[in-house]
Length: 410
Image (cartoon, rainbow, N blue to C red; front, side, top):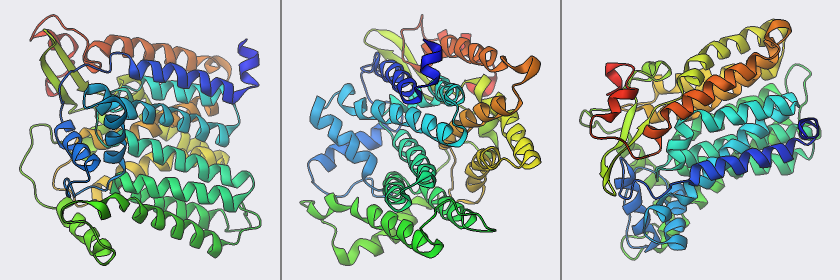
């Protein structure tokens, strides 16, 4: 059976996606009340669903529209708030699989990276929380996959698809903008020094197509705001409104107990308790904490990919390493007054890809089955932490101490 799956990558992807969806959906109704920043985005989604008036205007509308769609379909309850996020989480897993399959054309490598995405813990928490990050991750990973797919033929059509996905990603959160810029740089690189990864499509038409479609898609996401009962958006205000959003996003905020600096995120210095209180008669907790094997092992994998990519001239490996490095570096320059560990969500997905690439590059001889051993360690840690990332019943108010490896995790 395994040999057959190796020859059927998309069957394998579908199986992994089904497992991911079941995992993300299991116990979705807990906690039964709003947790962490759901207190901002669920009310904003309710208001958007009613087309009442502008609210939570520091962020665009796409993620809140998905949350609103879940409420419309399943009711104003925990399942309604979060169900669309589970689908976005599964789409993220498929995006990771697709990126790796397009880069390496090895089902084993792609399945390994996708499985790590399921086990990295941040994706499970974000997929089960009505916030923005899981939608951001879904559209960015799928946008990258579509961009890589456009190198395999029908470049104009597939590049248009990628641009739409990136436009939607920016419509979730402006944190996607650096990835749009990175896609443009990839187009330039792919047409330089005799390379032509998009045959039949010249550089400037490709850049114009990608830029115009992504920008048009982004602005189209504001369509619901034109129909608010109070203070509707107008075409004349659409562009100036972006300046207002920028001012809100860069305002100086009061200190927060869970704030952290960008350099601390890869080290797992300060995770975030999204929820820790009694719910449905028992103590429950949701801790946004990455899987230590993946978060720390992935750092080694990034440098292993960079070393092998540069030394062996393998662009796929170099690209994955630079993707992670760039995803973290932007937070060093973005003018945000506060940082939080959940900003690391996208970077944590690139670590899964880096691990898949590193084991592919170095997994020979005695290391031929090292990826299986690593996957087992990641799985055991996922099971170990599962009670405090899934809002499972805990023994009591002090039960969390069982999982606190460091004081900064409390």
